[in-house]
Image (cartoon, rainbow, N blue to C red):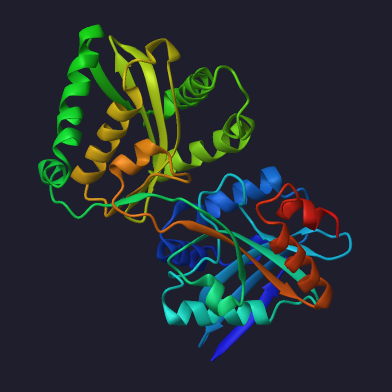
Length: 348
């Protein structure tokens, strides 16, 4: 028997159940640590609608929503949008019929007479649109590697000859400038300096521009400290002659390693710093027995060189009520033109 309850705060979710379901979801963006940190930085005291779905008394799904817009037609979004590389219900993958049924029940039991749910960055291989009766707005790339090889040499043998040669040649070429080394930032005493260095290299990479990642610095500063204490943080630095020239910021959770952001010294723009450092981080993931390496949102060419699959991330619209359907259809009609989804929603 499936029961659905809506609570008004993430703090009402039993922590042990939440951690169990985040493990089943298989990504760090579902954890209490990530989402509670997000809420402290971005919640702005908005109204939360947290769906808890139980089957025979056991919590099987959490649907963490909040009311993004109140004026006129309520628009709901998943807690965590923006910084998160993946969103959606916190449960086993929705390809599992039991998980899909639980989330379908949660949407049906939503305690609002009319609303639009903007369901962003749902994995494209989980068929959210089918059981949620949702309309697809956008699809983004989300490349990844299945790490089925038992050794780094086996991993390289499965790649093309040119790729194998570059993995070996590029570090040797870089070593002409000085000794090449890699440092994992796992020292709590120098953690703040390492985070500052990450942002310094990131900002240099973008010519001093204040990117979305740079604007999210307070959030990442807090979460990176937590991730370090949990053993999830994978903050690598590539050093040449003892000087840091590139950074890789990612997370390791539930057998999955996820790349998130990085930076590099633009004075070495002719050197393949990103390729060298990413190759090293994947090498370490293979050696340590990770089952998957996710390259993050976006279909950049360098990611495609490493990826073995791309399930994608899809953004959906779900509507309840006549006014909600009219607005949703207007947003669908405007897709791809100057009047985009959020501008349509902003006018409601």
